[in-house]
Length: 192
Image (cartoon, rainbow, N blue to C red; front, side, top):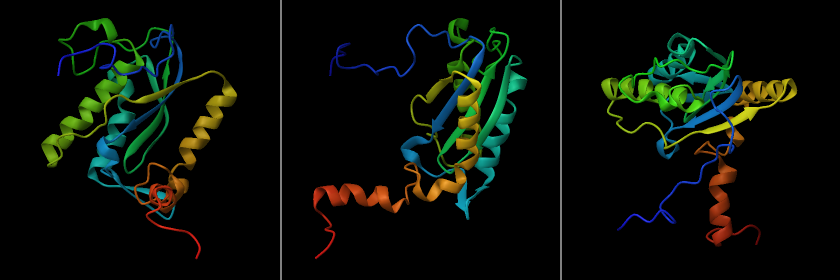
């Protein structure tokens, strides 16, 4: 199939004209490929990390070591995704300390560069220690946090995430979401 820029493109979810290296707080969600539960499980509302999950958590906490102008705020590693807040201080963004040092530094000072470095680190560990080759879904989700109130709401959302795992749409065992397509197709019926 021949490349057609009208049909073969990904729609950006980024804010147009926003400088993602500017000072501020960013709520980031990174999902595993096919929403596979690679990092552990939630037991009674508590996330229990396996080795891969502990590595994902450790690498998140180490973000400021690779990007000194970035603070890793509240985060949670869930079975198949990671939520976290990255705070870029002083408006200078990330220094070029990512594992991709030989790349051009055009994007080295952005939230995207930080997420890319994190994903590369976890993927490298997974490839060396498990049979998992493809760890992450393409891209990531992010939201610019605009004020203190929103920052506090996002922090609470992240803290509550394990408690709400049973009803989370990311949970592959979520009965409500797994039954909905069958109900809609008529495969199963409610009532007599």
